[in-house]
Image 1: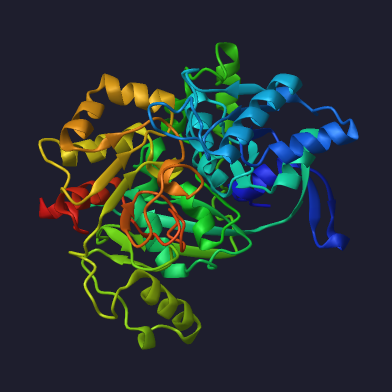
Image 2: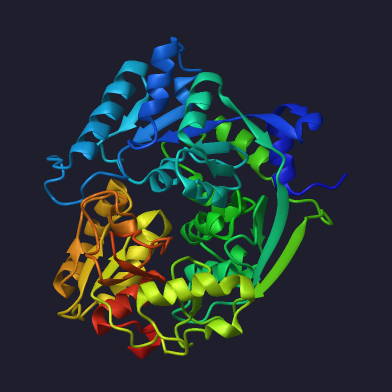
Length: 466
């Protein structure tokens, strides 16, 4: 029987299946990433019940969500964050789990450090107590977010109960125009199918545009799979994948590399394999995208106008009115030229070195608008070091941006980096929910190029305006 890559990975990891219980199976988990926010209760559960770790070598931890990104980050003022960090350090030491702490050279956002260390590999099942774990799918891995109780289950058993998902094929075809990026492509998909368009599915991304992407661009695509309701998203591994992984600290080495490569090359969908849904998007005519509302589905071309509520499907109108009320936008208004006071370049979506390079090219020789505060936050200590080595940090600081220490930062209002109430931020992150970047804050999602250009202009503009 012809199978797609999703089915191949699932079949290789299902220990037992109970179709009578709703097609639920026990899925073995190859690796789990931990951070300070969703791991403490899981460790406590093991201690209370006297359960040992199933396999500590299949775990790795870092600090990212609630930590400060200021230069003096070693002093954590927030009580909750300080306790979370202390608990993770204590638990990792007690259970013998590898922790990539501050100044280890490898600390950073879980979905940035996994790939750059080579922990993320094709064909693996990977979980984390974070909804954007699908990022790792860019390597041909089946990766998804889980809850805190499930984190405990994986720690104790190395497995999870999972219902068999549906599958979706999304083909991005064509060639990106200057100033248009994979971030714009994934926002286009979400706008087209909606935040529930892929509910219950795992997406395989393919097509000529995907094949031409770098690994970092593929990670951006897979990262936002959850925003259209998908359980996960992945891309079949190819020579681009293998070149990225070769020589990474935790990637197979020496004779094991050839063995791994032989296995990885078989992780492709069979010709004629079927899917529950198939969608094709031509990126050739795509223009820079930006969100106008309070979820990623409410996105449009930067050249477009805010929709008229009555022109939307009836099921979308209530949320659209709520979005317009919250964001202060008017039906039919142009998004281009909308004033912003804050800008953020970072997160697990766009906090990698290629993202910083793209933003730096826009900012080179220019100044951030005097009314705008721009944060540039590298996704890891490795990205930070590389940005410094390439002179990117100097470009950002000369332009008037704040170049900060690695972490999730302004992606979510869980740490010191928050957008003030009533202020508008254009952001490279992945969610524009109400209050996502701070109570009362207003978020517009866009690519690093669009965010950098808008930070200079003081309003939302496409790169081509420069």
